[in-house]
Structures are given as structure tokens and as C-alpha cells.
Image (tube, rainbow, N blue to C red; front, side, top):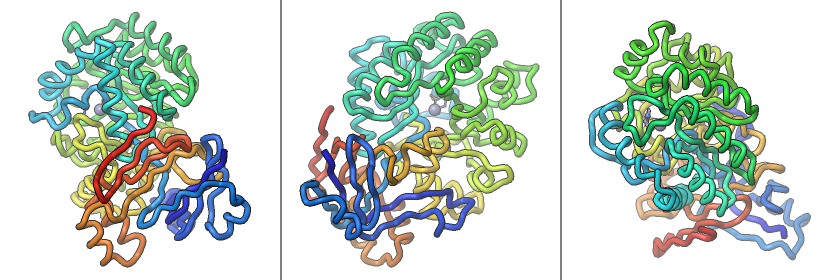
Amino acid sequence: MKKAIRGRCLSYRGNPFTEPLSDCLHYEEDGLVVIEAGNIVAYGPALALQRDVGADVAVTYYKDAIICPGFIDCHVHYPQTEMIGAYGKQLIDWLNKYTFITEQKFANKEYALKSAEIFLKEMLRAGTTTSAVFCTVHPQSVDAFFEQSAKLNMRNIAGKVLMDRFAPIGLKDTAQTGYDETKELIAKWHGKGRALYAVTPRFAPTSSAEQMEVTGAVWQEHPGTYLQSHISENKAEIEWVKELYPNRKNYVDVYRHYNQLGPRAIYGHAVHFSDDDFRIFSESGTAIAHCPTSNLFLGSGLFQLERAMTGVPSVRVGLATDLGGGTNFSQLVSMNEAYKTAQLNGFALDAHKAFYLATRGAAEALYLGDSIGSIAEGYEADITILDLKATPILDYRLEHAETLEEQLFALIMLGDDRVTRATYVAGELVYERDHETGSMRFIGI
Ligand code: GUN
Ligand code: ZN
């Protein structure tokens, strides 16, 4: 059955970092998004479209709101939900002190199911409809995640973490078991419904050369799957990689050597990248997940966003939370911290570019730019409704914002999960929040 959503609609057709905004922006002051069988079948001015749609189509009108593509989070760890914002030092200490303790609990499937449910509910509350997700080393942590994701029919990417050294015994696989389990999980989940599988080596330090070898091989053996990992996040980590891989030129060269770069490979952080590193990522079609709340929280450094997006050659970049190193589920908060990070690098990230990084740009980074991340005919109907009156201060501030750009920027600076009025996944309403009462409702989970 057809249905439609009406209101102010915001989407991007192109990349505002490299093309004029007028060519990229598809904004409708009074737009109509027509949905059928989980897909967008028409999008345009409401008055023009309504005649074609017919009187029998239910139209939900969102007043004082912006209808935009569901946010996409390019790098996040669902098992770390329970330890978000844990006080610590920098990356390696934080991993040993909190992360590796927490992740051992995911040997228990029931535990993992509960955590995945809480995680997905938080994502919906944040208006995020697709994520690239790290599970733990336990295959059952992947089953738990995809089982919960399937209840909501979400387009999520996830995979079993591969790590065979420098971790507690309960978190280590071997080159062989990691390879075998990854193959089994790909067969079970990749392409099942909207699920997509990512081969997930945690990062170069926690995999032996033998595991790195078979990890590259298993990814190459399954075209269409993803590969996700971490790179150049922290200075001590980079030194450690140099010690562990003395025959490789640098961190990028480790992943290159083991055939882990290319389209559908996505790496979190890339904070301490050289021009040569950016060039190799660009030429190989490898993407970066920019994780600003995490990079600031763990004191990792300032990602060079402007260099990545506008340098020659440019790199595919999507925005990410990297929770629990990241400190908030909301991509509005990620945009806010991305703005501040860019400011410290001498670049004032504008609102359209920030929204692009969490929608169409993130979809492009995941090579899903022709199916999600935009409101356009033929796209999957993953849609978020942003409430312009979510809080008293947002309401008041927006009375004093004149242009769309000013309004979006105020949303970024003042917004978080409270701004999500409704979230649609594959055309179905799965979450809504009443801004008068703040009461929340989930449908389907
Ligand atoms: N590097 C390796 N593992 C992790 C992780 O879980 N979080 C972050 N932020 N960096 C990592
Ligand atoms: Zn991470």
C-alpha cells in the first residue's frame, strides 16, 4: 500500500565539498515523499505530486519539522554501548581497561541480544537508520546483532571482530577459526534481507601476520562484502604498528600488503594521515570513517577533513560515532564535533556539508550511494523527521534564524536525540517521540 510523508524535505544529489551547492541540494519547502513496498516511488513538490498520488493514499504531515534521509553511521561498536564515556587515558589503556573486559561478556548470546536491542533503539532515537557495526570476536555476537536488526528490516553492515593476539584469552580467535567463522557468517547473513557483512579485523596490532593474510584472502573471496578496521588513530598505536610490522613502510602499507584496501573497505579515524596515505586511499577507493566525538574523547587528534574532501585527490569520507570511544549516538552531535575539529584545523565546516557527511556522503563512503542516504525516486525509504521545536531553546533560536542554512546549523549546535521526531525504516514508522511530553514509542522492537 502506498503512503506519503509531507513537509519540508532536505536531500543531496551531489557532493557539496566539490560541486556548487545549487547543483547538490534538493530542498522542497512543501515536499511530498511517496513510499511503496519500502521504497521511495516519488519525491517532489507536494502540490504537483498530490494529484498523481490519489485521495486513497494516507499522507502524514509533519509541521515544524525537516524530513531528511535517515542518518548513516560509518563506524560503531554495539558491544561498547554499556561502557560509553568510560573515563580513561588514551586508546591502548582504554582498550585494555574497559573494552576488552566488556567485550568478553558477548560470549553469552542472550547478553548480546539484549545489548543489540538497546543499541538499535538508541540508533533509532538518534535518527540513524544504517550503521557499519563492529560486533565482538564471538560469532554469536553477530547472530544476535543481525537477528535484532532483521526485526526492524534495517540496512545494517556488521561483522565478527578478528583478533588473535594482545587480548585476553576469551577474546582471541586464531587465523584458522577466524577465517572459518567469517566464511560461515558471510554465508549466513550477507544479503539476507537488508543485512550486509563486513570482514572485521580489529586493527593491525591485534592480528598476527598469519591472520592478516587470511583476512585479506577471505574478503577477496567474497566480492560485495565489506572490510572494516581502524587506522592511524593514536600516536602510540602508530609507533606500536611500526614495531610489530618492521618490514612495512607504514600503517597504510600494512593493510595494503595484506590486500585490505579497496572499494567497500572502510577505516575508522585516519587522524594522523600523510598526503601519501590520503593518495593511496583515494586511488584504491578505500573510505575513511570520521569519528570526531571519539577522536576528541580519547585525545587522539584532529582529522584533516578539508584535506580529505577537497584535496587532490579526494577520499570518500563518512561521519561516524565510534561509540563507546565516541560519546553520543546522535549524528547531529557528531556534526557538531566535526565542526569544532575542523575549526581547530582552520576550516569552518558549513551545515550542508555536515549533513551531507551523515547522509549521502556516508552512503557514498559505503558504496551504497545509489540506494540509501538520499530522498529520491528509487531509493530505500529510510527517513528521519527532525523536530524544529524539540526543545525550548531550539524553538527560540530558530525564530531568529533566517535561512535554511542558518536553521540547519542551529540544529547541529543545539540538537541531539531529542530532535528525532520520527524514524522510518524501509517505509515503516519504527520510532516516534512526542515533543510536548517527550514520550517515546518503538514499533517492531
Ligand atoms: N582500535 C582498536 N579497537 C578499537 C576500539 O574498540 N575503539 C577505538 N576507538 N579504537 C580501536
Ligand atoms: Zn572503532
